[in-house]
Length: 229
Figure 1 (tube, rainbow, N blue to C red):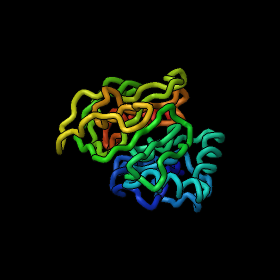
Figure 2 (figure 1 turned 30 degrees about the vertical axis):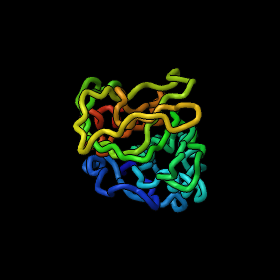
Figure 3 (figure 1 turned 45 degrees about the horizontal axis):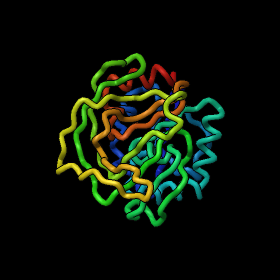
Figure 4 (figure 1 turned 120 degrees about the horizontal axis):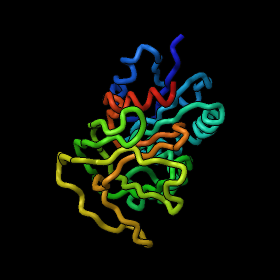
């Protein structure tokens, strides 16, 4: 019997063809599921990218998604966040320009030690990186970054987590947004300039990355499936 992977269907989710790399693995059954319809039967939950991350976060919270994810993890499941999903897994999301919703600030799920600040412009790049964990260590990973958010580690740092990718190159589809401070406490905003991308918990239960199409990369697939099997 194939193990199940569910991708939460959120109102502002990104492209639905992004996870073809998963569908090509015959050991898994991959399906899109609304959080309120999730029956708890899955090995992996994926939070996809989002056109309005904070609005999707609020929808997820109001429709039982947060409780479902925490229960899933407590039962040994795995959670992956891609772009907006990565931001949702963090500690806090700041949106002073209201580009991702109607709130200045919201609490995330609290599963990754990052704070995300959204700015008024989008960064769009084709990004190459080197995998830093697992059986695919050192392998090349290629994907797309499309985001107005910039995430920074919290003061807790990395004790329970590992960096996932080291960025080796970015090809910008349009000029990179100018770095600046957007908040009273001078939290820097410089999307798609970070030298590292993504985090994974040391127990391999929580994963996050800004790279769309990360599951299309053989090195990442080897690392991921070795960890969850």
